Image (cartoon, rainbow, N blue to C red; front, side, top):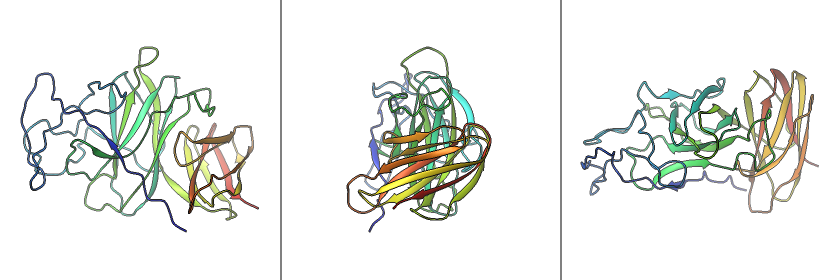
Length: 296
């Protein structure tokens, strides 16, 4: 059996400079002289101009790797969700701080006012960003297209990514949240959080946890192909809800949102090797819970 490699996607970057324009170039690796990028192409797919990230070099040589500045907000793993908003066709930036251990992490963006925003997670250790800069994943799903509505709002965008240990000050990843231009004007309010993907296998002992309202814990099941599973959530106190996905946010499997917890039964897809299924325990209200996955 094998664990699937992390997915690396290529996201094209807009080569244009700011409207005021400056045509300088910068030194890159040996034999490479990339154009300085001061407008990033992230978001709507319509080649729109996006806001410059606060950590981005404005011009001149990029002689050192890009590192987050104090103006860039960090997403501490397993901390309470941050609440913010982003305007249409604008981009908010965060970073996942460096860690001393590797692992799987999920970044989740939950809309709170039925206005859509999209999520992009970029490689944090890149020395500079040029055309085809590496991204770790993105989610720009139709917000209400899969049936997994949370607390009367749109479904979340989330990205799972893996990384090696980072002990030299680089962030684990950069996080871009883009305000979709479709729909009503005004801010796209959201919560954003970063969480460990707690690895689990079928028929292990139950995991327990405590969550504040609006917070999440994620469990990643490594599943055998074409096998029946049941994800089981029990409320000890409060009201937790359960949502089950495949390996990405667009692969919604099912949910249980009644009081006291519940179950989601599913059969894993065909394939070779192990398959990833992601289970979100979401606190509709502050709660303590017990979670496990069983299989006959």
